[in-house]
Each structure stands twice: as structure tokens, then as C-alpha cells.
Amino acid sequence: MSYNYKGISNHPEERQRLTYPYCYWNDAFTFAELDEISKISSTNLSPSAIFGTEEIGIIDTTTRISHNSFIFPNNQTHWIFEKLNQVIEICNNKWYNFDLNGYDRYQYTEYHGNEKGRYDWHVDIGYGNEWNGNETRKLSLSLLLNDPSEFEGGELQIGSEKHYESTNMQKGTVIVFPSFQMHRVTPVTKGIRKSLVVWVVGPKFK
Image (cartoon, rainbow, N blue to C red; front, top):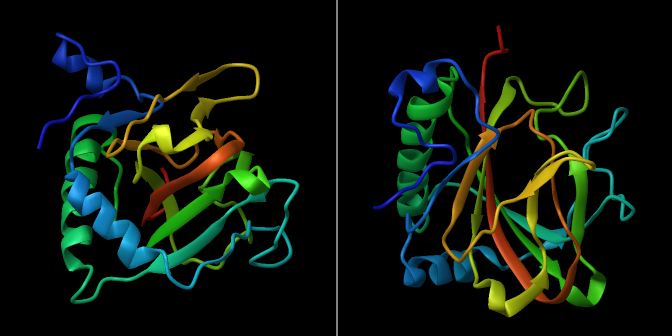
């Protein structure tokens, strides 16, 4: 595997002082593997929900329009999780050093151009009673499964509404970032954007 990191420096001690908004890894999966992930994951899709302050699983099309499924480790998918685990461990050790316990699933998501699929500015971490997990989402991972030539729009942007950076993902690019980092997927205006998302959990930040 080859990998590149946002903000790499010739001063190694820098990584002990700074928390970067994201890092990225190219070519963690082959194109054939990416296509297989899409094939395995794209059945039984449901409208994507968001977390709310009073209940779980709110469908809010003013904020998010997409379709997703949740995939768990099994005999068919174990190789996917093994590769994801390697990426997560290396990126976390090099750039974040968060206290992580793991994750039990990944989310496969499609954004359809005929629906102007999107996900507006949000964070993944979850606060208060926004979700019923027992641990804190601490590290988020997004993997683009198809080529950007297959869709228009659908940029993963990190920052805020006024100050953001487009991540310029290609097929197979993995973006890893702290789950408290604001981000969005801009509207897809043509074609279908396919991605895999993981939220890695651990004890509260301290």
C-alpha cells in the first residue's frame, strides 16, 4: 500500500503538537476490490437518516438525501474490515493518537444525482442523547468507491461553511479525520457517488 498524509513535514516532532483536520491514503484498495465492496454493499439500501436530539433515525431531507446500508463483519466481508483496520491504526498512530476501541460495521452510501443527493454541514461525534451508542465516535473514515468521472458534484469538504477545503478524492482515496471535525458532501447533480464510511469509537476525550 502507498499512502500520503495531509501536511507531512520534515520535522517529525510536529505531529506530536498538531491535530490536522484530516489525512488521506491512496491505493489502500485495488479498483477490483472497490468494485467488489460496492457489489457486496449495495443491496437493501434504505433512505439515510440523521441523529436527532429527541429520537434516533430522523429522516430529514433538508439536511441529508442519500441511501445507505450497514455492513457487518462476516465470512464475505472480513477482508474489507482487515484492510480498513490497518489504515485506521496507521493513520491514528501517526497523526492523532486517539484512544480507540474499534467499530462493528461500516456504512455504504449512495448519493443520486436525480435527487440532488447531499449531506449538509455536520459532525459525526454525537453529543448528549443524539445517539444510543455506549462510546464516543472519535475518528471518521470515508472511502470513495467509484471514479469522480461517474458523477458531478459530491465533494467531501472539511472545515466550516465560511472556511473549508475540498478534499479532491479519487477512486480509492481514504480520508481520515477527527469525528468532531465539521464536514459535508456537496450536492450530486449527475450520476451516483458511492462511498464507505466508518466511525471508530472509544472512551470520552480527556
